[in-house]
Length: 171
Image (cartoon, rainbow, N blue to C red; front, top):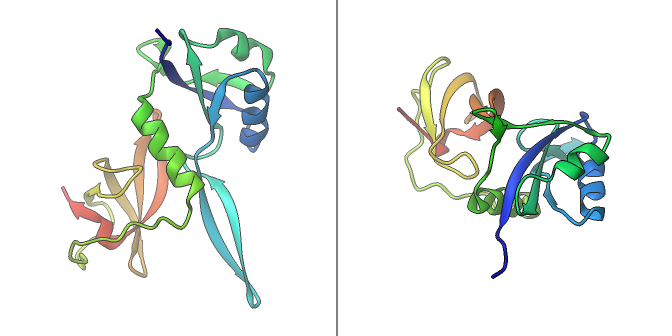
C-alpha cells in the first residue's frame, strides 16, 4: 500500500517563496506556491507579473508519513509553519490541487451566471462564489469599477483580495 501524501504549509522569508519551493523539491518533497497573475500596461505592452495568491511567505509542502521535520530544520529560508490546535495543520489534497490549478492557468477566469449586484457597500459581509475562495465569508473594504476588495481570513490572518462584483453575494 502506497502511503498518501499529507500537505502542510511552511512560512518562509518574504519574497523567497519560489527559492524555498526549489530547495524543498531538491530534498524530494512536493511543493506548491499558489500565485496569481496581474497584468500591468506599460505603453503598448501588457506585462504579466506573478504575485503570491495567499499573500507572501506561504509554501505548501506534500510529504509521505507525516510532517517533514527534517526539511523544516535543513532549509534556512523556512521560519515556521501553520499550526492548528498546536500541531502542524494538514490541508486537503483537493484544496491544494485547486490552488495549483489556478496557479498554472492564470487565464482560467470563471464565468458568472449570477446577476451583478449594484448594492454592495463597504463593511458588508459577503460570500465569495469563485475558487479558490469559494464559500468563504468576507468583508468588503473597497468598491471600485465593478470589483470589490474583500478581507478573507486565511491561515490565521486577514488577506485582501480583489473579486468581481458578480462573483460575490450578500450573506
